[in-house]
Length: 247
Ligand code: PGA
Image (cartoon, rainbow, N blue to C red; front, side, top):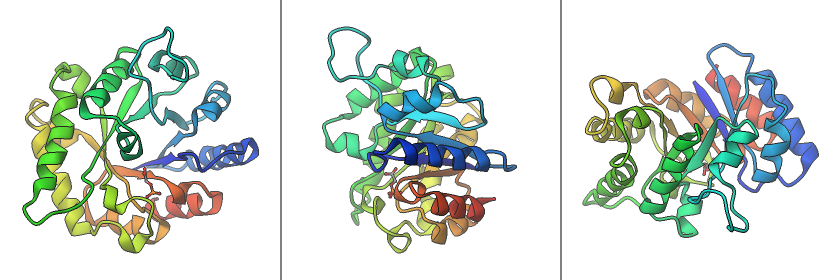
């Protein structure tokens, strides 16, 4: 099981960042649990550069540009240079700030070019009765996957994060049956882009109000490969409780 912690901008204090990292290191020694930490960029360099533990680091986003006159941007190459293994791309909070599917595709390609593995976030804003949300998710996947080679496609991790479920509480998160249905749909779309068994082997995380109270059920009742957790992973005790629910 993968437990990926998206600290967003919740963590603004280096002492707290170090404490969460220490907790992550402890949890990463547990069998069957892989810990990925996605700190804000300022802390990513501080923590990832000297990391010798089983914790893997992720950026929360990367630039769609390479180096040059781009004030404020963090390039995939820079992220790779400080030792991050992954980067989130297409998080709904970045999409809300202007990232289109085409921009997310560029970011994904840049990440792969520098050997940073993309955690591609997909997910609809709302659910409608005509199931238009399915075509939204298909489009998010296809725009990114289409230009990539088979080999590149197989390096992505996917994170299904319905926007309507983000930043709430366990009671508002997706139900197991709906998540199972969505995982099936995502794998079906992936089978158009990945050969043979690769679609069924693709790593798909769920994110959106995962808390200790619902993580165990979602893990047990679906074939999800792990979770991308926001607020509940920004407190050490809750982070441990989440890991307890999964291991
Ligand atoms: P949440 O955020 O766990 O706070 O809902 C998840 C995410 O946006 O990655």
